[in-house]
Image 1 (cartoon, one colour):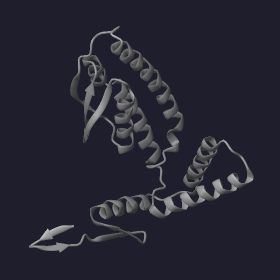
Image 2: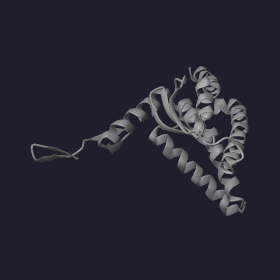
Image 3: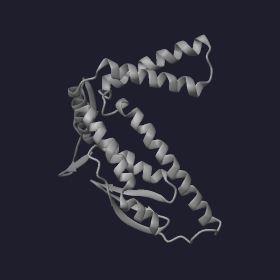
Image 4: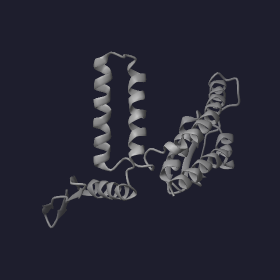
Length: 205
């Protein structure tokens, strides 16, 4: 709530798809929903999302009684209807076209995580080189927010490095060793995420 000349001004509500959202949050949500609605919500996207939710539910549950099978289907349908109502079903939010490319990327990232884990363990046990903490900026070449987020999270998932701040196409990185920061600045991870980004933009276009 804002104050002007001693009188409180209530935040305005913004409507999108018949749903009212208050203040700045409302403006953001309305813009997101409108943009997504204009891109369309294909039936295939909803079916794929529903299948993903259903198999995730069953995988985490581990129970296959008739009651749970029915309630899981009802729950998934309810979630899909809600996401559709909010305008959050689109290729920008659920990039199923990147499944194969993401599996290949995650396989590479998993190897990097294991290697970084070994380096950190050796450092903690005093068997490797001592820490040489460093902070610096790393350029992100990706154009979409989805792949920029993937890149930032990949840095944080790798032991010894963490994304502290994201400003546009620049990430502020803290690294346990200077070599780790230099490796990120060399751009191998950035290059792989950029390939995903180009593939994703090509599929969406």
